[in-house]
Length: 251
Image (tube, rainbow, N blue to C red; front, side):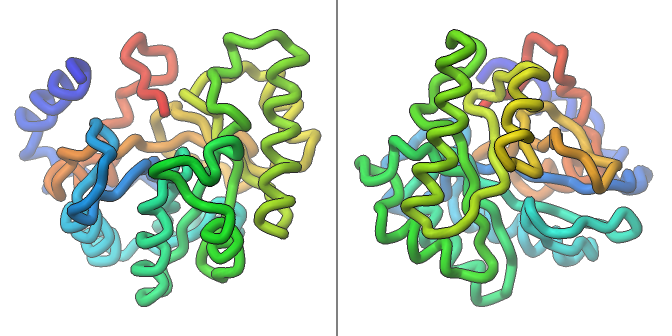
């Protein structure tokens, strides 16, 4: 929480940069978690009120970005935003239904062991989400344990089982994943890619400039990110949250 207010202060000091800064070419992947529709029991830094999230979408559309899913074909000559959600909270189901009205695609990374637990998506909801053309289901681990804390055979099983279990529940092939807590090694990326994951999301901050990338950078979004901050994030002014920083954002 402290790191967020530190960078919030920096953003307040740099408000004048928004009007003078040009968009960086590349694919901007946004990392959300939970959306509060007024009855949410998820009260943390990653839970946004629906009006805040809705304003984000309006800003993205106003600025001329094209929405894509993780597994879609990305084009570098277009301003592109990918909306992703980590963990598989129950409110993601309502988000998907609301975004369907405007044909806005999204990718939901689900922890397979969390399916059916309180505040998380049910099996029936996962199946229904998988049937929606604008929704992509991805993996976010089997148990949500940080993979770097596990033995080699353990993290390999986490990745492998998360894919097979989610494919069984959804009835669809799953080709995208995100690392729990943002913790990973290059060996894990190589292993996951070999299992059939074509795009693998990290919590490393930044923009993606290669359409053939396997390892994907994302921009973390927080509950107090009103549009004046979102504008900065779309411009890349928060990309200084570097992968090597001790303040690295995890999910």
